[in-house]
Image 1 (cartoon, helix red, strand yellow):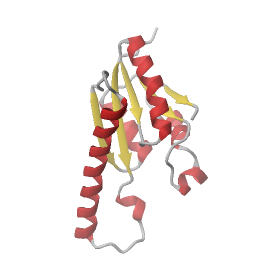
Image 2 (cartoon, one colour):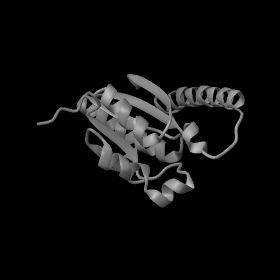
Image 3 (cartoon, one colour):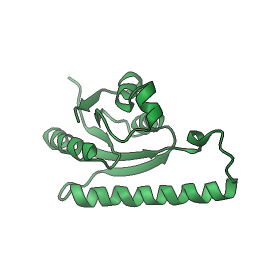
Amino acid sequence: MAKISRILLPVDFTECSVATLDHARLLAETFKADLYLFYAMPGPEQYKGLALETDWFSTYHRQLKHEAELALDNFVARHMQGFEPVDKATRVGDVVEEVISYAKKKKIDLIITASHGCQRAERQVYGSIAESLCSKACCPVMIIHS
């Protein structure tokens, strides 16, 4: 029987993430598993074709990453009283690729994600993040209807 000792919860700070957190926390407590929180923000490749000054864009992106780290800390403080995650991380880049890369690095046993969240229009056209995670992840993915 497979052992679940590391659970990854990608969040996007929406109410869907909060609802999914309840399920992730319950499973982590039930299996005595470590819970990892993760947020990925779009990288520079999302802005292809735009003429952006490199220095300005680099500074802007650093600031966005800093804001994302603060938002993740705030998410933990507001919604995880009495249950601290083992690790929380933010990455810049394609959401699915970053989640999968992090899951491999941390040897995650289960990814729990919301069925819907904060998606850009092109994601809605080309397929959801949850769908992509299911087909590309290195471990089982549990999708919580939201």
